[in-house]
Image (cartoon, rainbow, N blue to C red):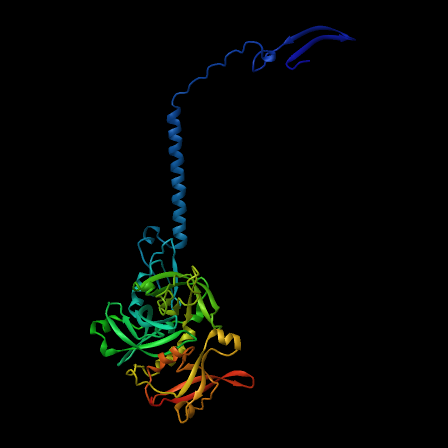
Length: 445
């Protein structure tokens, strides 16, 4: 039986009697083959659009009413006025708190525990910049070709930080490699004025140097413009803390770059085998930035930048000497007497014959780099100090000595009668050990 059909009659055996009657469904005649009557026309209701508009207006009023009630409840619970919150300044223990920017907000922590949120570092940089200087180094570069030695006068650039100001001297700190081998050091201040600086002392291992400028060589306006940097505590640094590097990048003048503390106590080994522990940052530190400041958001110097560390083959990685480790060395170097070059031909005399121990020679024969003493003159300053043939000079007044040229560069600051400290490597019980000698320079024959 097909769907939508009704059978009436009886059925006996194989014979069937009766009739099929088709009936109509909602959709039309059986099997869908009949004519489908048209749907009755719907009555159009007048005023449909107006009724919808009225409904929307009612819904809007309801939403507005509930929103207003919610806002009022929040105001009563928090005691805040949203109307005035965007205009009023909040005070944190007497310190104004500027409105935070949604982009790159910076959290500052001050010594008394209060916090300031700000995304603008220009005020901090403006306060720090008078303590920063650029350094121009004049030096002579030597090269040997086919047995002949050639000399070329050149200039290098670096940065420095004003760390103390006395009645007679202005004291600055920079990197050792910035001033090493300099025939002249020129310091450029924030106001563009310049002054010549002299070396007080340096530490090659820590790559630190302290230089001084006579106060009477500075213009009065410059004295009123410059400032002394505030030294912080690098031991309290945390990973992810924001820092700013300031220095004479590429010799173009003072510039600012920002970044974060990427790593702490990062051990770095130099090509000569020595190593040190440094702050790693992604703030751009390029040639010329060496000796400049790495500062925190409070404007405190927490590191001394060095582009020498890591070299130029890296990107996004810079290093700085932690100020907490550098501070005792800086304070010691500040106490040294400022060195002035003596007249040509009037340098002090040691009375030794020597030979440079090159890096290759040191590697092949297992001896330290430096200057090998091959002979000592009788009655000389070297003999009086207890120096022996076979000793290898590695330091002279704290300066690292690796060649005859290094020794000549240092000696030009010391005349006859000057008392100096010399460190030699001496073979004792099968190994080279440091021996410190006090030596009074004599007159050159």
